[in-house]
Length: 160
Length: 203
Image (cartoon, rainbow over all chains, first blue to last red; front, side):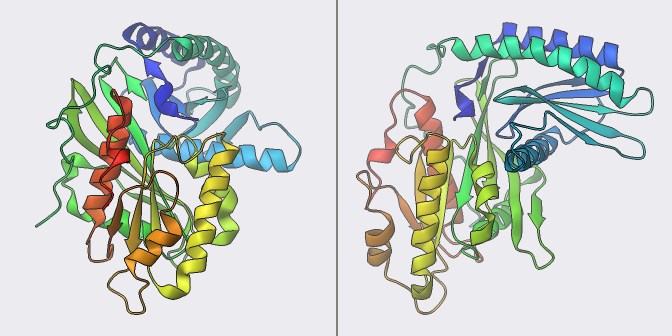
């Protein structure tokens, strides 16, 4: 269940970046967000517009989970795509694997068909990278020793 | 989730409990008190009368530990009985839990039912409370007709490993940060070496 079991190493991040960049180039989408189904952002690439990517990830994962639950009520394993059409920008969300979804933000410079076509290809490639990352043992270096007293201090100070 | 590329560890903390126990009030107080640099926007998916219909969401950032920045994403679940399907969806991927109980005598049954639904929903993900750090918060201690803490402990904190608990009045901010700090430290500790706090800090 736990998303924290996923460890993204430098080389994973580089490969994911390469796949997402290729996806954006081919599909014409503006932004691509790779999101854990628990709502956590794994990676993003795009034209750098100011986005509240953390909030979008939480909401997209929730929306996708709801549609998956609705699919099950209809006897479907899942609805593999979720599409929200806006006046200027639209969102396409699709399945990568059991743990991950791919969200693309795009505008009138491309079409939902193009995004859908290349999202499938990108999802397979990213899914392969994540599959390898999940089977790799957790690196020991920084995580072997328990936290010291100083490292265990309270993260936040309540207002006095 | 641990990301070596940007040196960030993300945790998902879910506030669970019966309807009107004060889960949203916890997040609202945290949102009010933390400086902008340490928190993002709070999102509330609520009905017209401010009852949570899906979840509240508040991302907060904290310490850097061994070169990794730690970030905590705080969620609440909808407490009302009929929203169990959405409660289960919000639980997915939780790294830490806060069970917010309503301390009023007349809400004891709802607390117990909610706690049972938490266990059942975790079971759906093939997980249990033995695997996820969690704390109890006995909220609404500012109201009359309160059940004594010893009684709440007897009812809710009786699993083999007792967990930390906090008396709170979330609407006034009492106990809110004690709860958040402890569950965050427990989630963090579970990522490094042995998990220690879970075994003590119980008075």
